Length: 443
Image 1 (cartoon, rainbow, N blue to C red):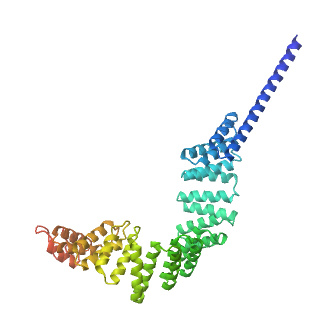
Image 2: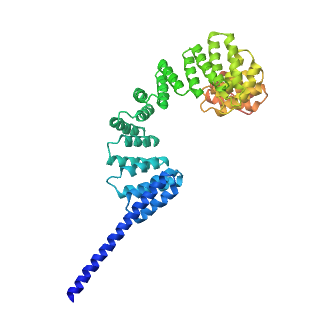
C-alpha cells in the first residue's frame, strides 16, 4: 500500500513538472510569436499594432530586455513628446534588465533624452554605455555633443579627442571639435580641426562655413575667399552664398570681381532683391573710393530696386539713403531714412544719419526724434555727451526748455567740464536751479 502511494506521488510530481514545462514552452512560443508580430507590424510602419504586440510580449516575459527595447524604439519612431517619454522609460527598463551588456538600450536612452533636451540625462546614459564599451567612437561623439549642448565645452573637447583617437575618419567629430576649440579661444587648434573635417568630407558645408570665419579672424583673406568660392559652388541655389563671396572680394577692394560674382548670381535669380542690395552696396563702395559718378549712378539704381521690395531691410534702406546723399539728394535721403528707421530691427546708424540729414534740412523736430530714438535703443553710447548736447540744442531751438535742460544736465553728469553744455545749461535752466560756478555741475 505504501509503495503504491509513493509511486502515485512520484507520478503526480512528474506530471506536474511536465504541465509546468509545457506551460512555459507555450508562454515562450507565444512570446516569440508576439515579438515576430511586432517586428512585422513595424516593417509596415503600423506602430500602434507593433506596440500592442510588444506589450503582450512584455506581459508574458516581464524580464525581457529585447521586448522593452523594441517597444521603446517603436515609441521613439512615433516622435510625439508623450511617446518619447514612454520610449525613455522602456530604454531605462531594458538597460536595468541587462546591466552587463546594455550598451544598445543605454545608447538609445541617451538618444531619446537628447531629443527631449534633457542633456544631463543623455550625458549619464552615454557615459554609462561607454563604461561597457570604451572603444566606441560613435558613443564618444554623442557624449561630446550632449556635453556641448549642456555648455560644457571642455568636457566636449575631452570626449571628441577620444572619438577621433578611436576613429580618425569622423568628419563630424572634427567639425564639432573645431567649434569647441573656437569657443574655448584656441583659434589655431580650431583651424586644424576644421581643415581636417573638410579634408575628410569636402561637401561638409558647416565645416567650410566655420573655416571661412576662422580664416577671416586670422586675416587670411585669400583663404577665406577660397572657402566662400567652394561654398558658393556647393550651394548654388542659395543667393546668400554669392553675396558672402562678393562682399569678401569687396573687402579686399576687388570690386570688379565682386560685381562679376553677383552678376552671375543674378542670371540665375534675376529678381532677387538681396542680390540687388549687395550689388548696390559694392557699387557704392567702389564709387566712393574711386570718386566715380557712373558707378554711383549704378549703385543708386541697384539700391533703389532693392529698397522698393516689400522685404527691404533697414540696412538696405540705409544704403540707399547713403547713395542719395552721395548724389546730393538730401530730401530723398531723409524720406528713405524715415522708412529705414521704421523697419525692425532698426540699423542704429540709420538713426544718426537721419538726425544729421534732417538737421541739414532744418527739420529740427525730426532730427531730435531720431536722436531720442537712438538713445532709447543703444545699450552703451560712447558718444553720449555729444548726442546729449545735440538733443539739448535742438530742444532749445524748438523752445522746449524743459527737455533742453534735462539733456544738458544728463550730459553734464557725464562731462561736468563740457563748455558747450555749461553754456546750454545757463540758457535753459530754471531760475530756481543752481547755476554753474566754474567747473561745478548742477544739482
